[in-house]
Length: 276
Image (cartoon, rainbow, N blue to C red; front, side, top):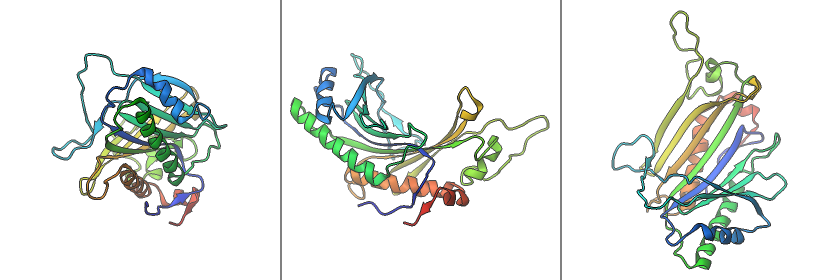
């Protein structure tokens, strides 16, 4: 079981993703995608769409990459697409993503008052989906997935106008990333943007936490927002993370603890932080 981490009544999270990566399923074809849909439940999932596949990514420690190493594959035929399915519940706030090397479950805040389900709730749903993947492989007569990576992502949104007006204000939200509210500038210059991307080793060599900030903009100025993305990813490890669930538990703790280290203490109170 994962150790307890703080929770919030109204966190700024807008997307949460649990995933596994595995060796390519031998013998899988796009004709099998309908059978996968049958196994996970056509009454529970709807809106099938083909999307470009997500490239494989590996966290290695035998050299010094600061980002995920991308595995380039030279294939004589185009790769199979990524199948996406939307939950058929009223909120339609879940997304299943399946391709020959990956399975992901997303929660997305699709409504103004969408409620984040918590890691405890979503990990149960994801474990069910992994079990369904195993059953699907058995049904079509192929070997079960050989998992090589676990992955967990949190995306938080801070709208412009509520907490910040210009990039120089970002230190008020994320002092752990932007400790200086206003960097030194020459005459005639005004800061108009900031960006950050870091990678941290989850010691000892259990994975990496990738932290990224970006700005999203819509047609209306009020749609502008600062986005914080934290992705923890790592291989199955014979020590502390022998299973994908152990890895996801570790990634959850790592991501939440780093989030707490980055954000302003008063904002944590505003979001209704609860004790561990």
